[in-house]
Length: 509
Ligand code: SF4
View 1 (cartoon, rainbow, N blue to C red):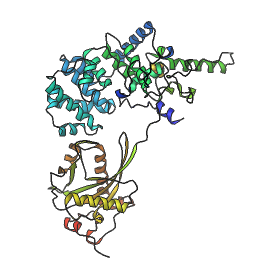
View 2: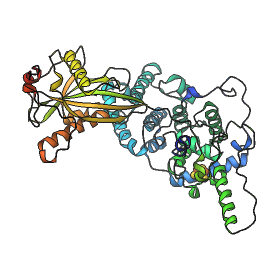
View 3: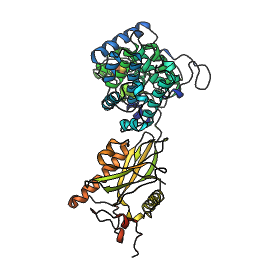
View 4: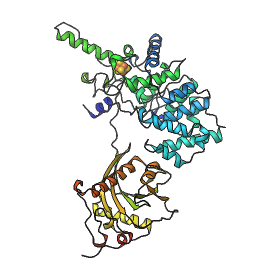
């Protein structure tokens, strides 16, 4: 299977996780991405029969009423009488659902709504509190933007949420076309469609759209289709039903087509059935015509699969959607140092520092870290980290005092990040200039309650694993890069290094 097909079969866009479709990629209605006028899409790729649209709406909504999952934001949206509170409750859920799967979001959502049940409460929170609650959800900037937007609603809009999808998108930072449509349809009953990863998958299969599903032409077509299909009397339920179908039935890899409430409207499924019927007739030796499984019949159709990637019978309905091959993530290496001391009851404490307030992981806390050049050798990276710590603390830190812990890999959406982890046990206090970098000592419990990234939790876990191995030497794993003893700076397993010893330069052989 080609990379392109593998990506398509896997669902491409990440919803369950990712809901949003970049608004910027969408061209103006009626205009082609290159500026010309767009021809209407070929009939097989649209819903043009009002009777069929009506039947699809009824079938989908009846299924949703029977099978929908019981989720806290749905309960709030259905029971909250105040429109602003209702919109806020939906908004929070939609932003969180852009991060990860429903099962993970529920706990975060409940904690968030308990802590900040209203826009006004959220507007008064500190960024630190927001980051702490968001920790582990990823894309920390989304939590930050949500809070900034709440502040704006309170200070500039008198606490009143904009009442249409257009105004929500226009007035609230971080609210794109998808989120605006979801809030407006679910909270206010505005008859506007939504397009997220699940909807893309379902619509592409319903109408055999096999062109790159992230291209502006296809995204335009899908928004038009979503707006045409949305039920006028129950738009919020219809949109949620379409997304629910994508999340539970029309899933990326093994869709449950036989149980699907809209299979009679699905052209991809019709193709599969035709092929199956043909195969079984052939098996029993019955003369039969070759099934019509060709593309829509319009030469050079911009919505059909590309000529080089035609329909593949072995994939069935998962021929759709297709997505351009994903850009490879950037590879990055960072040296990071777990600075630790014994706390008042002998339990370890760790020094963490705060990241800058903009950029990746803005405002989060981490172990002192230093980005590394890709091909830097181990001794050089150790020296670079020692230099960094020396400049940062003002002490004569030496490379030989840093103990190698291991490498920790963390995949951000666009970065393949490797942390080269060292530890540095201290027996003295370390106070850094707060004007340089905010820093603090934390216990393990405080560390996990702080606004730290999942990557940093992995780093601490690696260090704790090493400590466990040191305290049970028989079980220790073979470590390739153990630090060689260096006189006064030697770091015997299980011993705390004195700060003075650590700061002393290495002794000559
Ligand atoms: Fe998806 Fe299959 Fe239903 Fe078509 S029939 S919408 S492919 S689950």
